[in-house]
Structure formats: C-alpha cells, structure tokens
Length: 148
Image 1 (cartoon, rainbow, N blue to C red):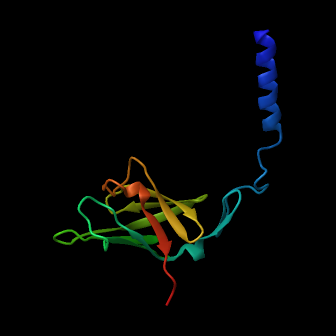
Image 2 (image 1 turned 120 degrees about the vertical axis):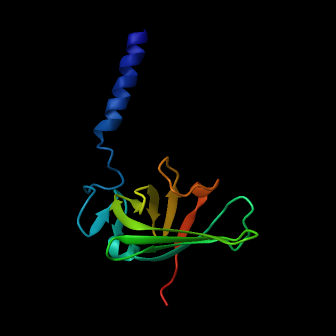
Image 3 (image 1 turned 30 degrees about the vertical axis):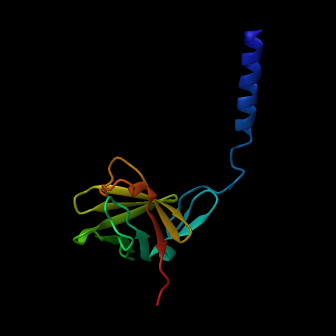
C-alpha cells in the first residue's frame, strides 16, 4: 500500500515538472543590454538614476534617508544620513552588476549588497555580506526619483 501511494505521489510530481515550469515566460533568461527575468524585462538604461529610501536605525529621526545613485558606467554611490542627536553620514561607492532581477553592488571594501529589482523600486535583500549594518536594513526599499 505504501509503495502505491509513493508511486502515485512521484507520478504527480513528475507530471507537474513535465509541463516545463514555464507558465510565466517561455524565453531564456539572460541577454546583453536587456535583462530578461522570466516574467519581466529589465532594461539596464532604465535602472540608471537616483533612488531614495528611509534609513531606519536605533535612535534615528524621521529625516534619516539613504540615496543610491546608479551611473551608466557601472558604478554606484550610496550616501546615507542618519539623523540622530548628532547627524552621521555613511558613504559607499563601487561597481554594480545585474543578473536576472538582482542588482548586486560591491563597495570599495569588496563587500556586496543585493537588491531585488521591481519596476522603479529596489528592495534590499538581506544577506550575510551586507555592508549596511543597522537592525532593519532588510526593510530598506529604494524608490526611483523623477528626473528634473
């Protein structure tokens, strides 16, 4: 009886895999200037620009913010100002890469930080190599500012 149930479960799993798992998009992921992410296309040129997020930390005021700048030459800058009793500023710069729908920035100390690309927003993905150390860093969502 157990063997029959096992075979039935295995058949269901394999039948589900046989559909190709590509209900979202039949295209291969990857490319040169346009990065396809199995459901949405990410245009590298549209990512270039200035993004802003609220910076959360212990003892920070509401005006604490972080600005992320993505340049066309593959470089970035993150300028974070923490409004505490005495304002504190953190500046990171380096290079960035895009793979699928993930933006990876590598700072001047070779530390990496990942962001999930979702339209005009970049959501910081918590990871062990993060160079942003405050408690709620994983909640940081950068929104693209309109060009002037």
